[in-house]
Image (cartoon, rainbow over all chains, first blue to last red; front, side, top):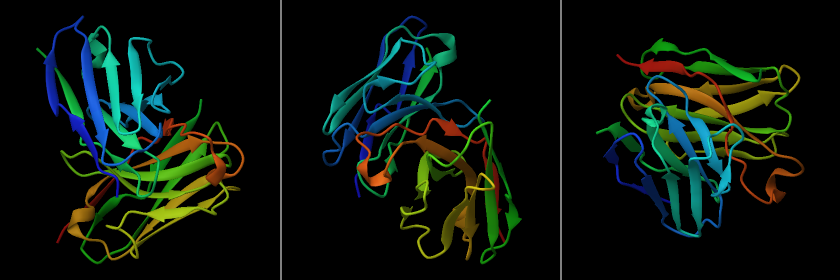
Length: 107
Length: 127
């Protein structure tokens, strides 16, 4: 199974800050990676797919980079509505696996 | 508006069975690979099972293999998860989610992500 390791597990940041979340795969997954945002009591929401492609309707302050084993989700200027938990997920091979999540909290 | 609506969750004892449903409205599930994802209380997301649009591809997490069965009825625009021999550790919110694709599921050039999700249905297994 491919393990997805996210870091940090939590981050405290202020509105306007740049936030970077990393995701490392235990083996190469090409660009078969997605990022999701989840707010309390809600279903996850797709932000980025194919590692770098912004999902329609998602603000451009979100961006994804990486390929192979190392990936990054960047929020260029944190907004109040961005405080949530973020997950990476690989789809290169089964079983599909999620990272452990990164909680972005208000500083 | 494209929506997925799950139903069938509930409270039951270990060893029991339950069938979850996920019905699409506003779009056709035919070109969606459908997935069940669960989230135990206070925990992260766990992938459970996937079925491709034509049902050719079927996959399960080791934790549910042999106990859960995924299926779909494209005429009814509905996805199912039959859950048997339930355990306390199956307690979670269960979400259905879909990835749009075209052509053969195994010949996709890239991953499109799960862009449609249901609101979740809660399964509680307790004695």
